[in-house]
Image (cartoon, rainbow, N blue to C red):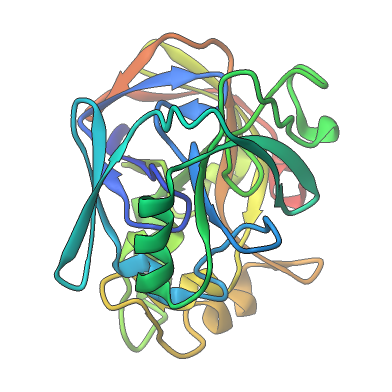
Length: 274
């Protein structure tokens, strides 16, 4: 087995950046979901309510992000340097965030037709993962990702799903960080620890999927009820539709890359029930 895809999402719910290599940090891949858009109540925005967010294309430059949407574009510095902070809400977390400049907020507001702001999670802001699934309780952290630092999917599991769908879908519907090639379909359900290259990861939980999987990531529109309807027929556990696994890294500061060997270090047959 080997790592076939590496993706990070510089702004939560906007387009992915495909990478050849990536640095492991204490909150996930470097640059992954360190920024997000919030509404006037400081609550996060996502494709659940605004599927057109998928149409924002993002590229990473040396000192900034380039974000484009419907023929317009804006450069966003990696660090806002505004000196202005606020508390923002993502699910049950209240997180300290640094605000971006007004001209950037105005561009996003005009594009999405809703008053919104872009914020950054600074280094001194910490959002911990659910202690029950943490490797190091009250220490393991996550960015503005939904719940955990890394999301892994397998090519064979998507192939298994697509064989059951009338219209095949792409892996980008599931917005993974890591994609593995060479596994058996849903073999990842049983993984407890894996090694990617020289880096060890704890496989802590299955990912319960939401309506974002029904959003066409190219066109930014909801495309019916698939794949959730089909997945619910054979990937339903306690009312949750499962696809993909959440990971926590053993160490930070290491680099993983496309083509790295993926090795199973430890399995747990009960993993899918988590």
